[in-house]
Image (cartoon, rainbow, N blue to C red; front, side, top):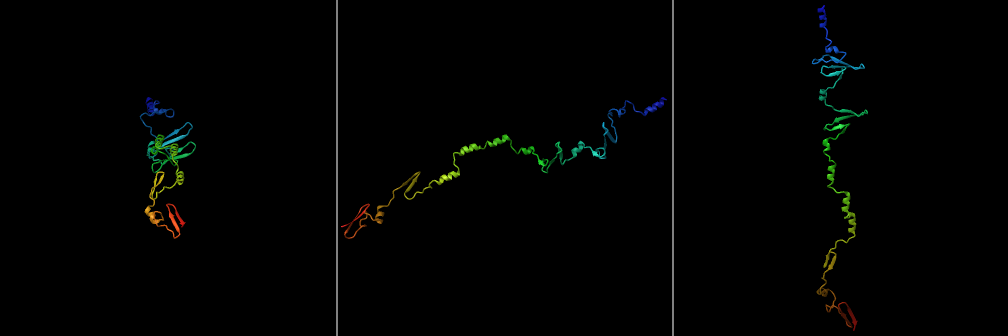
Length: 218
């Protein structure tokens, strides 16, 4: 009888074995694996999900939907990342052929792009090399505009050119001596300096002075 009982017990699992917890508690397999073709997960509402491995070593859900693992993500090259703003608006994050990052087809500025611009302190330094409009107007107030200057110049006498025996010095115009000589007058004009150049006929007499000629009847 004992021999038969022992034979029957040899085909049983001890109640202290981890597998005795299946269906009622968590099972700890220790250093050993549990091998099965599928694992069916069931939630408290009775919804099930079946996990299995395909021939390529990929983990599938319910026989068709693949599970994305970290190695799969590392091997993928994404053309776009879709982003939802919470209101149902989907926008894409993409890259163009020159390496620019685009959000909804609008290129984003990178740190390299921003380094091509200056900050407020840099702008102030650059502006210190220039003058303000108020200061410029203050300096230019001592000058006249070109239009006004042209009007003023039109009211002025053109530059004078000195003629013979004329001297112009500053605001003074002077005439130097250099009139006709006695020899030139004697040779070209009637003059008391040239006797015989004035005469009258019979019954008349003439008298020439420096500034007059008198003719009388004898």
